[in-house]
Amino acid sequence: MALQESLAKFKKQQEKCQTTLSSIAAKAGSSKPTVPQKFTPAVPTKPTSAVKFSNDTERLQHINSIRKAPVGAQIKRVIDLLLETRQAFTPEQINDACYVDTKANKAVFDSLRNNLKVSYDGKRFSYKSKHDLKDKSQLLVLVRKFPEGTAVIDLKDSYPSVMEDLQALKAAGQVWLLSNFDSQEDIAYPNDPRVPIKVDHDLKQYFREIELPRDMLDIEKDLQRNGMKPATNTALRRALAENHVCGSKPKPKKKKKQEISKRTKLTNAHLPELFQSLKDADSSK
Image 1 (tube, helix red, strand yellow):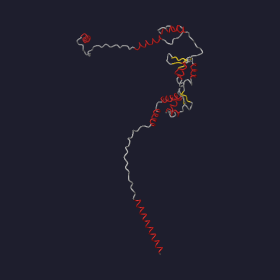
Image 2 (cartoon, helix red, strand yellow):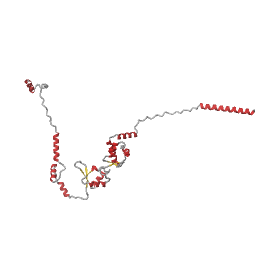
Image 3 (cartoon, helix red, strand yellow):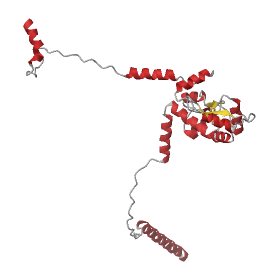
Image 4 (cartoon, helix red, strand yellow):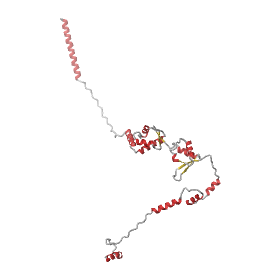
């Protein structure tokens, strides 16, 4: 009996402890500790800057303006690229380099493929000059091939340093650069070193002392007298100039003589002789 009473008391003590722990846990969950707030001073905000277009937006606008340009302007842009670089470009490379989309624009592609200054091998576009030259030696061979002369304008786009090489050949005495009488453009003539000509000083002096006629008509007559055809026709040119001057003068218009009638306002009444014809006409009626 004593043992049972001891067990009953132990159970009651356990239940009491369990009740106490449950009440403590409930109070701890319902009441949260308050954390003191720290004071933070207000930080002034920076003014927002104006919104600007990004570089990518500007680039897209630039590309759009190029692709909306006329076909001729896009062709020129591609040809300038090919001329400056002297490299072969695929349509994709052209698009990356100068923003001309030859694949999307059929008119640009066809015009570029058929252009005289462009060579197309089926994959790449490249610049095509009139004369396929690479260096100064090939330039000299070409000039010597045409003793009648080669227009410098047809040589300018052969390769980047062609004009410097042409001046070097001139300084070395291997070519002559003379201006054309009609177009005032330089013509390159070969100077054949195999036939050097030496002229005596006396002959040069005699040539310089010859006095030419002052009138071009006399010079042309002397050339014809010696069996040479003049390059000019001064007589025809002067006749055309005189006809142009005479035909450009306007003919003076004849002023119609104004007769006095009854409707004419008489302002010179103190000169009666001016109105004698009017009085005679009235009297005859």
